[in-house]
Image 1 (cartoon, helix red, strand yellow):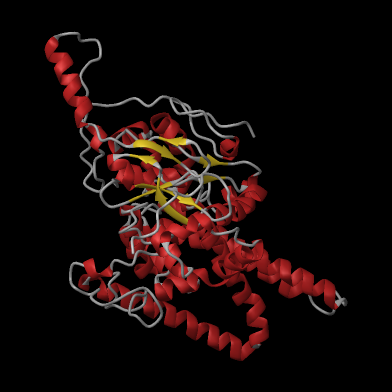
Image 2 (tube, one colour):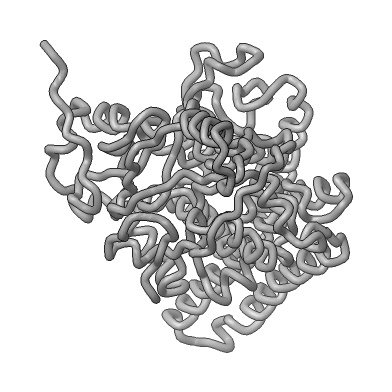
Length: 488
């Protein structure tokens, strides 16, 4: 893969060859963003013409420069200089061809039928032909049924993605159809559809915001130090984390990360005291603390959401009842292979995809004071998973940056729309496509080793002190800040 280049940025380190950024120059518009779902960037104000040489123009230029926020020198984990996005959400929306916004119920239902048919056909073939009569060898049968769980996990993840489309109203123009299909599909996968839909919508409204984001919010330096039983200044002095610790962390994340998130809100923000209706008083993330996706009184929701949370729980109850019936009728060992192991594969892919969409050495996070919608949506990254990603998983890996700017664009129009917004985003677009599917898996290890906590850059100034980047104890990439011990 060719090394990446960034227009107008400092010379890049070799490590950033893993991350591609568009080199198209950004064009600034003088039209104010009117999208109520996004906070306008401080850089969105009109700029005077550079060709004017009048005294009034020079004075205006000086005032404009003074009004611009100061960031200082921001350095990502790879050691490359980072520049804060300077375009508007209107620039993004206007760049996308209008037909990309069109949603088709027929097309959406076709993909649902295709994924269900794939699941059913795979089950029929294995149940019919992978038997002791046709394949006497037990090890061979075990190997084939193991392959079955992997394939069904991919098809199940594809179905999960279609329900995700429904949650964003990207599936069709009909909200009723979207929510009906989404509720059925997600319930079948033991996902509380409306509960997830609501919290996921809040994630989209606050992506990259350390105080409001709902998923994979990284630890601050103080939080990381506290977890290790250390003081913040000691993190820069710690030795390397052993690879076995990293491996165990990844195994735990991939095995139980999704149910743990639903039950405890792990990786979500923990500022529930700020919940507008007072539901979060005294509540913190964790098991039995009332912060979960099943309780209508959870601080993740408002009182108006209660009926939808209950409807989500009813969907889960129906699925659990069906599974109990099947287990009692056909045997729980059979159901383990038919459903539960593929279910864990679905969870694995879901967590891996989400983790890598929002965790990368090149990505920033923002404090509440430095965050806005445009900056947060750009704090995501596209990756590549080849045929599996584009055909079976419906492109959720390859077009995620676009998805955070305009989540109602259906996946089958997302490639074209992504190409369109790259021209606006320019150097701010992030993509790691090296190695295809194997590169995707490798990125999990790299991010786990390099992304331990976030902190400001050493050269940050003003608003830039609220732009945070990953650092680690493994001596990889940019070194953590040197801090003095607290005064006695």
